[in-house]
Length: 271
Picture 1 (spheres, rainbow, N blue to C red):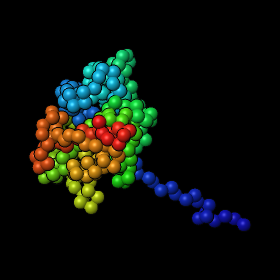
Picture 2: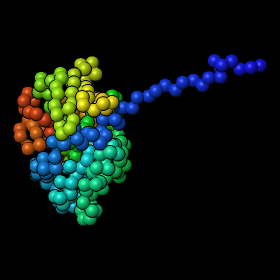
Picture 3: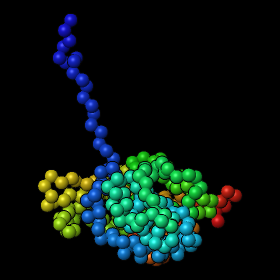
C-alpha cells in the first residue's frame, strides 16, 4: 500500500529561541560598551581591593568577566585570577589582551555561572560586576548562581556583587533614546515588566543594514531581596555601598548597589 504524502512528511522541528544572554554578548558588545575602559576598571579595582584586603597570590574568580577588564586589573595587583564567562567572543577578546601567563596566573574559562567548574572551597574571593546577575527567567536558577558562588568560596571568604540599585534605576528609566558610539548609531528601548519584575532592553543599530537586534532582560531585585537570597546561600552581607568608589549606600539615590558578603565559616559563623 502506498504511503500518502502527508504521512511521509517528517514533522517540523519547533524552533527554539536561544536565551537572550547567549546572543547579547557577541563581539559588537565591546563596541557598544567601549566607554567601559581598562582605566575605569583599574579605578574600580582600587576600592574592591581595599574592601577585600587580600594577600598577594590570593585566588580570585571574576564571574562573568566579559572581555577581562577587571581580571587584568586584579592580576596587576598581584592576585591569581580566573576569569569566567559564557561568551566565546568576549573570552577571545580577553585572551588577546591578557599578558602572558606567569606569576600570578590569569586564566580564562568558558562556562555557565549556574555550574562553575571550580573545586569547592578553593577561592579567596569571588567578584560579580556590572549587573551580571538576574539573567535567568527562573528564580531557582538565579539562586543557584549564589549557591555555586558559596560552594567555591573558602569558609570566611568574600563575595562582592556590583548590581543596579532598584529604586533610582526604575525612577530614571528612559523609554527610548539614541546615541552614537564610534561608527554605530544605536536606538535603545527600555521597559519594566511589573509581572516578571524584569527590566527589558532592546538595542538596534540604525545604520547597520540587517544588523542584529539585541535584547537584554534582567530580573530587577531590590537590595532586601538580594540580602535574603545571599543569606539562603550562606553568604552574610557585611557591607553595602552606593558605587564602586565606596560611597555610602542610599536606597533612593545611589546609582549602584554594591554588596560585600562573607561565606559562613565551618562553625556556622561568618568571619
